[in-house]
Image (cartoon, rainbow, N blue to C red; front, side, top):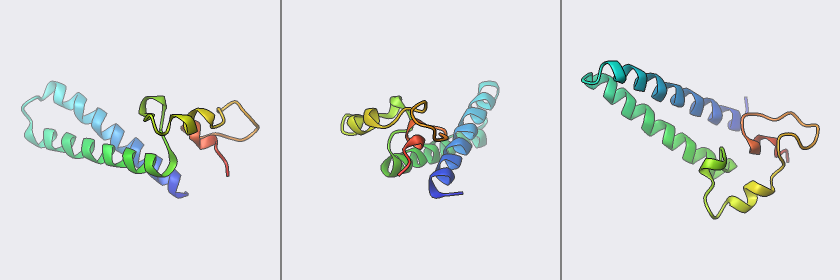
Length: 95
């Protein structure tokens, strides 16, 4: 597994942890351990996303910043070419 795949794996892992802990907190709103777990997972998710975006660009069009829009929009779309794409539009950018 290359660095990009490892970083995406971490993002998926932390995103699941945030979603799962949120569902648990819906039914256990006073559970302080669960809330601490949620805060930690949320913090790690945000850090993982920022690290990925610094290295590989936006994960989706929702994370595009004004200074990176041009490079995102000019990148190949998943249906362009005969390459296999991964999780995001930028996964299709083979170098």
